[in-house]
View 1: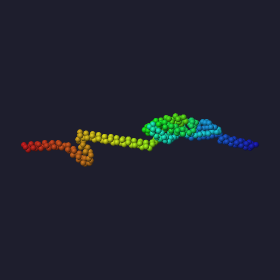
View 2 (view 1 turned 135 degrees about the vertical axis):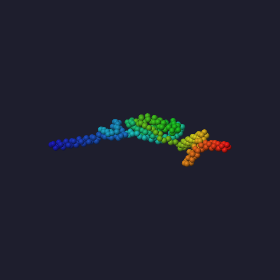
View 3 (view 1 turned 180 degrees about the vertical axis):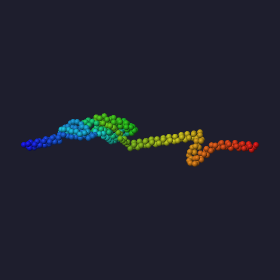
View 4 (view 1 turned 45 degrees about the vertical axis):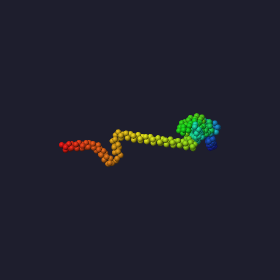
Length: 268
């Protein structure tokens, strides 16, 4: 009798364990959300919540989980044919740094936020470039990037996306206009080089004029400058000769006075 109870108890325990395992496998769901992602939980087609990175468990049926990448990403906008303020046709390409900051708004607002931002960037480029002359477009890319960011940021915020930066990557000109700009740049560089040469020649002429005035006022400077160009023993000999030549008038005076004395004594 006891054996029958024991066997019956074992059978009941086994049945309970099988039932628990079956319920657990059918109704318990475990999800792992990686870093840089956010999970949106749907129950019977309705949004039921949001999970951040980590391990999550949900009991029940008819659940679905969508992972949303919330890391920064680059969106490249290929060259757009636009007209500048001076009616010059150019192609302008952009690079946008974007990030999903509100996944719920993002999935409920648009089906593809990338296409939405791409189209908004095209419209922004046309609006900004149409009011900028060609010279400004080539020389003020940072300012133009700031204008584009101001136009795109509110539109991106409406779909749960933040635009961190907008960069004007390339400004492509037509072939004939590109050659014209190259010729203008070459002419500017040649003019700058000619100006620098003229400045150098003027400086050299001023130095020569100063040297000429100095030599004119102090003739000995010319002799010293000549001695500096010599080297070795020749320079030393020239220095000695130059120094001795300074006493030549003294010796000449003495010899002259002696000759006069001797002449007077002889006459006496």
